[in-house]
Length: 321
Image (tube, rainbow, N blue to C red; front, side, top):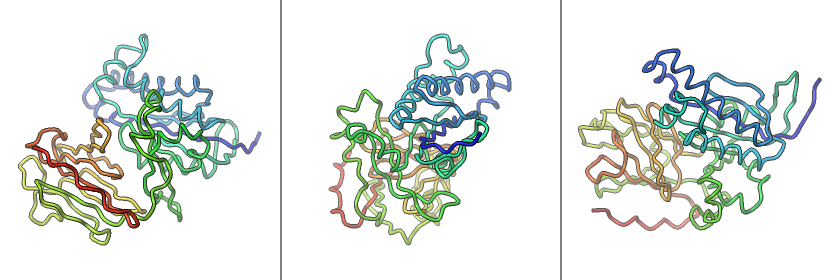
């Protein structure tokens, strides 16, 4: 039977399983990954959604109501942070140690349901949007945001329009910030949820008090210890070509190229995004740790700020000791 339905499509993916298989072996890693995917699926079902299919280390689900999908995404992140008792010792130990990172992406629109599977533009957009999600991030399209109450919308921060693989037109994307319990303070902490005016104009990078502003025409930009790098970071903990920043689809995409990894922390967010050969979208302002997390004043840490047309330049951050 074929049906055309208006649904919110959710894709969830667990990253880090390859390293687990190498470290723990097939049996133990399979138990952990299967348990973690099970926890994510339980959040879908409890939230009133339907798991369409599992996809190795993740799943695809659909929800009739957008608010229920967002609540389920919240529950997924909480469940992996604090697995419930009885979820399995291997799963609890592995997730608690940060071995697996969750990425979630959602889109809203018409889907075609055929033989318990779903197809359509919303499915394609959500699947491809997942490629742009960082560790423990939830990204949604503007159609998802439109289906929420104003108080719920304040939990989202507008990113730039992203060019998704296979699509001619860029898609406006929003990032879910904070847990549901933090909703009351979201409006002042994270700002408005409407799209920010103006296209990104440049990226400001500050390294040990030296400021450089890179226009979009100067990308891709390589960060590294090599003198030939576009932004040379002279520190032994930094690889010769440590990371790359691309201007792609109306957004700055940061990609780690190193063995020691890169670490991104956005302003107003204590969480540190760990990237090992992974990517994330740079938005607003924050810090990038090359080889070590931000926090140590002696560490190779760059401060970044996305500058936009039509906006007054944000005031510089206070100097740190």
